[in-house]
Length: 247
View 1 (spheres, rainbow, N blue to C red):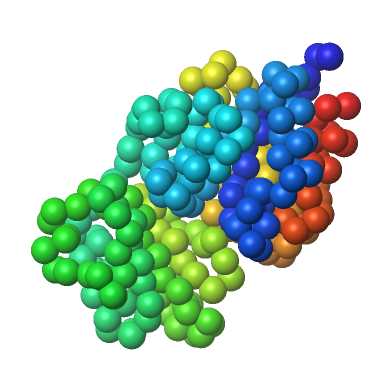
View 2: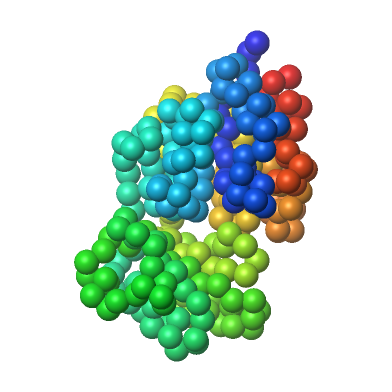
């Protein structure tokens, strides 16, 4: 079989994983079929490496991996290829915004994930920062935060749910991560199938040869995708492998 698509880039939460944070048996079965046929399967996630790698190990992946929305690219599990960091002064400013607006925040660093429960001022200079995030169901507050972030400049602003904002260094996203993976594997972007559900998946869905939105994806993602598949609870990935990759 000559494969049109050689790399399958998978978001995790809301895509690869069900709402119970598991890989369904049918999805795993079809992923293993794809791998057996020679398709590279790459996790492309907003999660930190330590929160993503157990699922890669479950699938037996030895392929490159994109974590923290593209701030890290791994040549193979446990072998870092590239890492992009947020400037400490910007992290300090974004943390102050969370206090000014009394909004929940989290900050991903190489050293761990931090929020108001475990935050300490000395962490700013000690840690290597990868991503910052806010969560609020208040639309007006989210819009105000977005405006302030845009005024700071030099930031990549996306989300992994309709109720949060995720901030990476400017120009760093899952598309840049998967382009790097393609270089490592000798694959062209036209040979990539990218599947996701949120705004942090949009750049790679637009850049891939086949961009796929999950049935549970945010509307803006569905509108930009080439194909909309079933939801993360209904084996949407398995359907794409069956109907578009192994055909």
